[in-house]
Length: 277
Image (cartoon, rainbow, N blue to C red):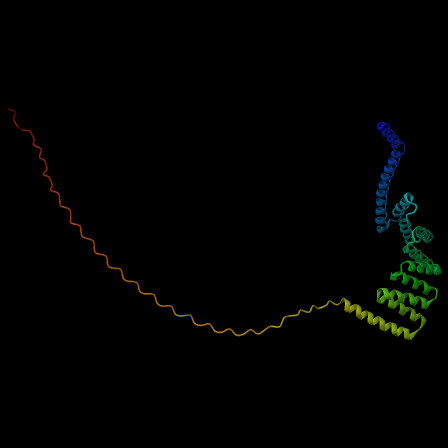
C-alpha cells in the first residue's frame, strides 16, 4: 500500500511540479543572461556618450529598450542624447515616456529644459513646478524656473524662485542673477540692497576659504626653586707607603772544579834496529 502511494505521489510530481521547476530554472537562466547583456549595453552607451559617439550610444540604448520596453532610465538617457543633438521633438517624447513609466523629477526637469530651449516657456514653467513638487531641495530646479518666468516677463516670480535657490546654495552667482533682474526692472533700492548682500556673501566665502590658524595653548612655566649647593666631598686619606722589599742575599760563588791530571803520553818503542837473538 505504501509503495502504491509513493508511486502516485511521484507521478503527480512529474505531471504538475516538474514542468514548473524546469520552467522556473529556464526563466532564471534567461534573466541572468538578460542582466549580463543589459549591463554590457549600458557600459557601451555611457562610454559612447562620453566619447561623443552619438550613433553608437543611440543603438545601445535602443537595444536595451528592445529587451525592456519599460526601462525609464534608458528613455531618459536617450532623451538627453537627442537633446544634445538638437532633436528636440524626439527628446521631449523620450522624457514624457520616461515620466509616464516612472514619476521621476529628473525626467520632468529635462523635459522642461527642452521646452525652455525651444521657446515654449509656459510648458517649461509647468514642468519645473512639477519637478520641484516632487524634489524641492535642488537649487538648479528653482534657477531653471526663474529663467522661464523671466522669459515670460514674470520678474517677481523669477526673483522669488532665485531667492528659494539662494536659501539652498548661498552662492554669489544666484545673487547676481537677482541683481540682473532688478536692473531690468530699474529698482535702484533693491539693486543697492542686493549689491550689499553680494559683498557680504563674498566676505563670508573668503573667510571660509582662509586657512584657520591653530592656537597652541602652552602651559605656563613654573619657576623652580634653586638647588642647594652640594657639600664638598671628603678628601681621601693617602694610601700607606708600601714597605721596601728586603734585598736578596747574594748567591754563593761556586768553587772551581779541580783540574784533572794529564796523563803522560804513551811512548811507542820502536823495534827497529834490535837484533834478534
